[in-house]
Length: 416
Image (cartoon, helix red, strand yellow):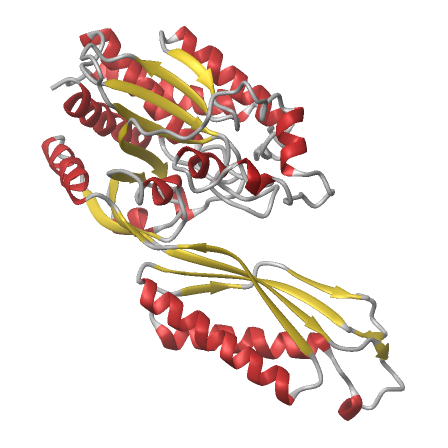
């Protein structure tokens, strides 16, 4: 399926143009994207994608939670489905390639296959998953989690966003969660293939065009709530204080030092900190901070978190503060399917693209599908490693290389 130089350039431009087109839904004033789950921008983007899928000749439908599918029926009766795509939601003021590239790549690959070979033997579906980021509600992988049976509607009952809007309420306002909507749970998926921008600097630093993912790290996310006592900053002696900010500082320093000692590939991030009453002349009596811990070895991840919890509990006993530890997300590390990964590698070598086996430090929907069906994940470079930012950028040549590999893999899986 080689392209001449003119066709190659045209396809590169099409991929870049479609990424830019989709970024217009939820675009921020500085060129970023804010497209949170079930927001107006999200609804308009999903509908625009549905129209584009129809334009490309795909049969479209939404499931009950808002996952969008564009299907090409296979010619073989009772054929299983090759599922490919990524997620439509973004972080606040994020980049335009994150998630979107995987959907665009899948659409363009299927468009090319249909034009050149007609219908496949096995059905192919392009999916625009409704949610992955966890930016609006305190959960992640709502789209893929519903498809694989990890989540159900019951999980939406008590979840609210920062404005107090419930997940189920937002879903209904966006036109989903109706009783007559199609159940999201699937049992016909043969495999899931995802393309994504790397969101890191490894490929660029290594001068490689493609990253073939072997594992996706596991993640643990915590809210750490420290309860001390608010008091006057001038009249309370240091040795009588129950300073929640001081405790938070100590615990954060411990986390950083412990992560450095544990393993070079373990990362721990304090992403958010709030203090009450949050004024200059009052001792903070209430501090909440978040913790995100990641590693691809579950034993290392579990040991780090247990050691941390033990240390926090001991610190609380000998200090004058209370510490509440709420683990609100636990995702296991996942190995990608070795056979599909080898298939990606063979195709990449045949096309003479430079590549690198890589561990994904970011979570992806492939992580959820990886425990459900054979799954493969491919990366293309992110310039300067920047992601979740308006400065996120991937060159059109790299976008096309990923699409070229995906197209060949889908041909081998669905046509041969």
